[in-house]
Length: 63
Image (cartoon, rainbow, N blue to C red):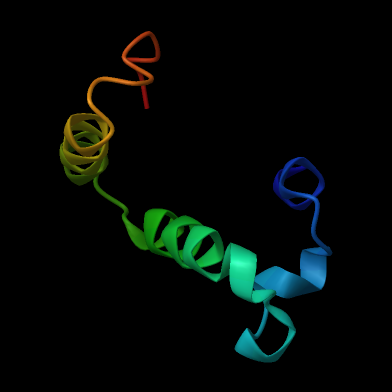
C-alpha cells in the first residue's frame, strides 16, 4: 500500500539499487520510521517533522 501511494514498486523498499533518485529521501525516511520501535521516539520524530513543516499534519496526532 505504501509503494502504491508513492507510485513506486515494492522492490524499491528492498535495496538501494532500485530506488529512484526523486524518492530516495522518502524511502529513507520510511525505513528509518520503521526502525523506530519506541512510541515515545516516534512521537518525538513526528513533533520534529511537524515543526520543520510549519505545523502541516497536526490533525493526525496519534501514531
